[in-house]
Length: 122
Image (cartoon, rainbow, N blue to C red):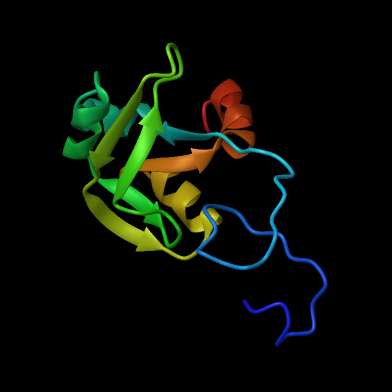
């Protein structure tokens, strides 16, 4: 979105910025976690490595790219993987609902999914 054309003084943007002459300041970070139900993992296999995520049905949001850098939570080791997009959805809620319906693995914000870990997704 062009701030000048739309007469805006400020904008909040998530993700990487395209080349721009605008000045950007970070206001925070968000961690995303790969999530799937136990049934979904039982049907396939529990991914043991970042590369094994590529063997699963990935529920992608419209802002997630097929090729991505991921960091292992234990050692911050970086891997670049190319995921198999099973579905592409326009909203975070849709990605979450599809994952909860055992349709695949979603890459979802931790602030959304951590409470579900405690309740088992209900």
